[in-house]
Image (cartoon, helix red, strand yellow):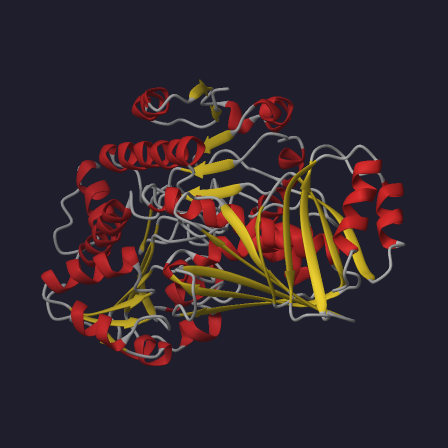
Length: 528
């Protein structure tokens, strides 16, 4: 059945063409994002939702999204998507972090020039018939210090452009390595140092609890007198009221903002000041950028819906189209291991450790871990998914550890799941052979070799003569057909396990009868 995508904001016609070319049905309703009720009413019919900034994807809308698998934001900011609610729903949220980077960086540089030479005021004055040549005295850019707060994708482009203008660039970014700073030919500094030295400050961080009001009243007071401040990133990174006060006092020489705390910004503390330049969130507003992000999000969403590839996801590890086929059998194995453990645990789960050995350790283990945890939690929480599972586990205080190491045994790739509960430790290991079929090869350190089937019976017992005959007689007496049978023991007369694939459903009375057999420790019917 073809996947269906709803486009609820204005996107390039090229995006519609990409979806159709990839075999994805698309419904283009560019004004729908403004109508929350109508969007909520129809969202249940779609596998994907492509948006820009107009559509607000709230928890209420997501509650109606019964089929939704992916939300694609054509642009960088996902402030208009309830990420926790989408994650809990198992919906992947993607954006296009690089599609409008150059355009936004160029806008920041343009605003810097507008401030330095008072271009908007000079333009208005001249077109009003005045010739106030001596009124608009500007400053040169060359030789000035540019302070970049946030030196990621856009910030680094701004830094490069500023260096091209013969400015000295200093940057504050906790995640900027000394090596990267050297490559960019910029000076990495602490925030207080930047505030004290910069002639121009350009902000390029995402909006997070840590970056909100990064230019607070206190930090703005630390700036160099005569500084000019530019914000093309996110409203709320700068305390607008405090900035207005410093503009009025003359401490700050000018400010240029493309983003505001409240948008659309019909009223703002910065409006009306002669040394302020404002634009209506135009950072990404070029023909090239709009086309780039629209095509990119259509390609990303199509790749996910048709091939399982995940790019630029906010709430799940990225998986390329080339990686997806190699990961797929290991994702299935991971889910089986988790589901196995989830159906045999007998008390609250405290800690989960997943050990990746050999070639599988070189794959995207975060995606595999999410699949393990989803399988583990699903018997208790039916609606958990690979997207929501890690956050659900965290909410329940379950510690998740990953271990990767080189192969140390007979298998090219090996995944071992260790689940610690309040009373027991369960250890299950599996691998994928070259045919791509997942196999369980160890249960609580007892070797077995079992293909996974939809319905299986797991038995833990004492190794005694005649047990297998009595066990199979119970199944035969209940008209249960055995498809495959895997046995293992740790030593003669010690502990043994059986993993039996059967046809159909196993009635509870059959399990009761098996539990009554001499030497039985545990019996579970497993469904995969």
